[in-house]
Image 1 (tube, rainbow, N blue to C red):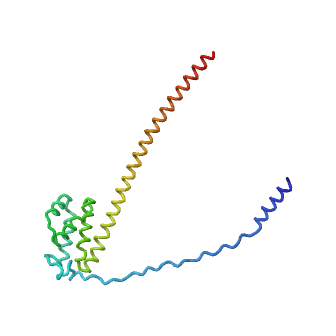
Image 2: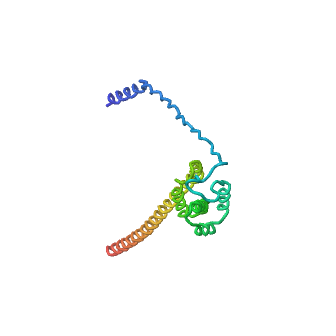
Image 3: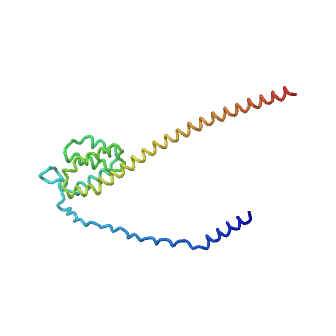
Amino acid sequence: MRIICSICVVLLAGCKLVPPPPAEPEQQIPPEIVEVKQTEPIDTSELCLVDEDIEEFEHQCDLSYWTSLWIKADETPWPKRKDTINALGNSFEDKLTKIIFTLPISTPYQDRLRASHLLKEIQGKLSPDFARLVKSIVQAPNEQMLEYESAITLLSRVNTQQSQSIENLQKELEAQRKKVEELLQIEASLMDKNRSSQQ
């Protein structure tokens, strides 16, 4: 038996003496180079929301009017904006006004979702430069916020369901604990009776 132990010790010690194989050097991966595409700046002095041959309405080429309307919408409480939206018609200008009055954060989810669909409906009529501007400062942030709100709503539902499940399990556990206590009391009384009958 001592011989086997001695051989094992010698073998294990020999393994430590043998140097490990050289590790392969990590290859350096060059960082990806992201090419930034330069775009032509938009000349806002001649920026029209819609080309005149597609649609004509007042303030069609007045970006300051639409910016002021956006600021006014942001400063107006939702119930008043909702009344204004309900009073508007279905012209292109009215649809654009509805979208602007729905942009502020205080607008409920369903109404912002409706405005997002309305924006997609009129987007084909927007001038190319204005469409780029709208996509960058209106559409992308609004869609991202809608996605976040959807995720929060879904997580809230899941959390509520889990809370209810935990509550139900706690009630069931309490009922099982009471049954076990009753059974233990019955067992104790039977054992007491059994002891007293044996005496």
